[in-house]
Length: 254
Image 1 (cartoon, rainbow, N blue to C red):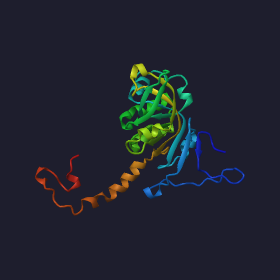
Image 2: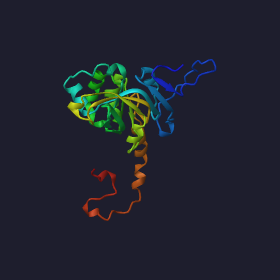
Image 3: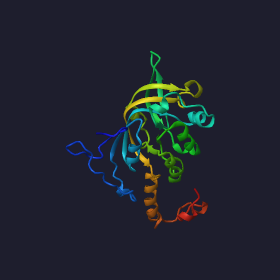
Image 4: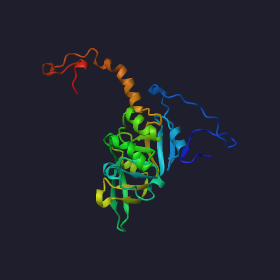
């Protein structure tokens, strides 16, 4: 039997349909330790499903989620406007994105694609957003720092899922079945309004920040940093060295 909020190929079941003993997986310390299991989440996502996510898991989402970015955050966090009725109860997944929306002849809306936005811009609003929205999973682009995950996400039991690469808007759009409702369209416009979307197998996304506050990108960056010196070793002097170009990393100004 699958636990609420999660449809996954983990853990395996025996012939009687009972869950096999769970295998304790150590936190990855190297990219080679990241297993990238495929996981299917149903919204609202349960605490058990969130806790079971591992860095690098490939995630697909089915059910309801909503878009909310700067305009919605200003209304809910800064101005104290309540979340629209029923949204908090229906889903706990917030997608940081802009929809490519159109109005059909019957007056209903269609969203054919979504463009993710970088989540760092939401910064210190995140902790208050979790309190007011009840969100437990944030989907966006590029992730945040491990410090941000530990300070803002961990206290609220939340995780961060990142989109993969650029130019995926139309591909993600194929997972959108219909627009359930839209809020604050007149006040905020198409890109900033809250769109409640019914989705089926929307993804793939990667678990970038887990419930322990660990970051997949930070793990990769630590490995890259260990060998970055090899890239600079043996480089000839730059032709424009007289203007400040240098092969010494300690002298670089970025």
